[in-house]
Image (cartoon, rainbow, N blue to C red; front, side):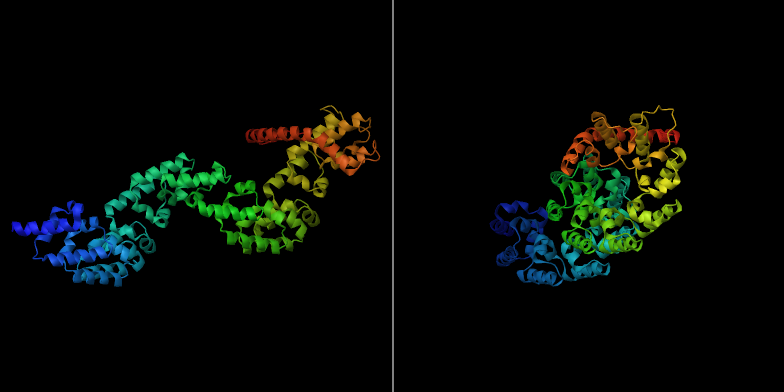
Length: 532
C-alpha cells in the first residue's frame, strides 16, 4: 500500500510540479483510492491541460484524475451541448466531475424557472445546486418583490441563501431605496452591505444627496475609483459640481460615452456654457440629438435659436411638433416663435390656460400675439402683477391692456422706474402728486437710459424738464439736437459709454432689491413700494 501511495504521489508531483502542494488531503485520498494506472492518470491530465486548464486549477480539482480521459471528454461535450462555453467549463472545471444526468436535471430546473441558457453559461456554478435549494432561493426573491425577469437578468442571486439576501435587502431599504428601485436594480442584492455602504458614503462625500442616490441606486454598484474618474471627467468638460450632483445618473456613464455626446453637441454649435446650463442634454445619444435638431430646423427654427434654447433638444420631435402646431393655431408667426422659442417647451394645456387668463384680464388677442412671450408666464404671477399695477400703483387698466409687456416685467422695476422719473428727473418731492398714466410712454424705457439721457441734457443745456419726452426718444434723435451730423454708430457709441455705468449699478441694485422684496413680501404679504 505504501508503494502504491508513493507511486500516486510521485505521478502527481511529476505532473503538477510545485502545484502539487495545492492538492487537498481529501482529493489526494480520493485519487489514491481507485485502482488507477499511471497511463490513465497521465492521459486524463493531458486532456485537461489541452483544454487550457491551468495546473493550479487541476491541482485544486485533482479528483477529476479519477476519471478516464474518455469520460471527462464525454462530460465536456455534454456541457458544451448544453450551451456552456469552453471558457466557462475551464473556469468551472469541477463540473466535469459531476454526473451528466444530475447536471441535466439541474439545468432543466433552471430553465423551468425562466433562467436563460445565456445566463446559465454566465453563471455555470448554478448547476451545482440541487433543484430544491434553487427553488427555495427563487421563491424567497419572489416574496421580496423581485420580478422573474429581473431574477433571470441577475441569475447569480439564486445562489444566495434567503438569510443573506434578506440582510442585503434590509441594508438597501435602510439607505432609502424603495422596493420598486430594488426590483429594478436587483443586482445590488449580490453586494454585501459593507461594500454598498462604502459606495454610498463615497457618493455622499462627492456631494450627491441621499435622495439622488436612492433615485439612482445603480451607482451603488460602482466602486469609488470608477465614480471619481467619471466625476473628474465631467468636471473637465466644464460641468459644475452642483450640476453633476443634480444629474447624478451621469456618474454611471463611461467617460468615453460622455465625451462622444459632448463633442456631438459642440459640433452643433452648442457652447460649453449652454451644455453646463442644460446638463441633461448630455444623456441623449448623438443620433437622437441630431434628429431632433434637424426636425426643429424643418419647422423653421433657426440654428441660432436652437443653440440658445438647448432644452428643445431634450424633447421628442413629436412633442415639439404638437406644441408648434398649437402655437401656430393661435396665429403666432414663425418669426415670433423663433423669438420666443421657450414657448415650445410648454404643452398645449399650459399655453391655453395662460392665453385664457390674459383674455380674462382684458388683453386683446392681437396684443397677445404681438407679445407671445406672455404665454410663457405663470398666470398667477401675471394676475398678481396686473393687480399691483392697477390697484396699488393706479396705472389705468386700459394702459396695461395696451402695453401688456408690463405684465411680463418685474413690477417692482416699473415702480422704481417711476420713482426715478418723479424724483430724479421731474424733481418732484416724494409727497407730491404723481400720475404714472401721464408718463406711460416711459414704461418701456430703462432707468439707466433715463438717467444717462438726463446727464446728456444737463451737459448740453437741453430743457428736458419741459420736454420730458426727449428722455424716451432714440439717442440719435436726442444727440442731433446738438450734433446734427451725428451718425448711428457715433450715437450708439455715446449711448454705451453713458448707459453702461448706470446699467451696472442698476442691475446690482435690482438684484438686491428683488431679494429684499421677496423677504419683505414673505413677512408682510405686500410689496415694498405701495405708492408713487
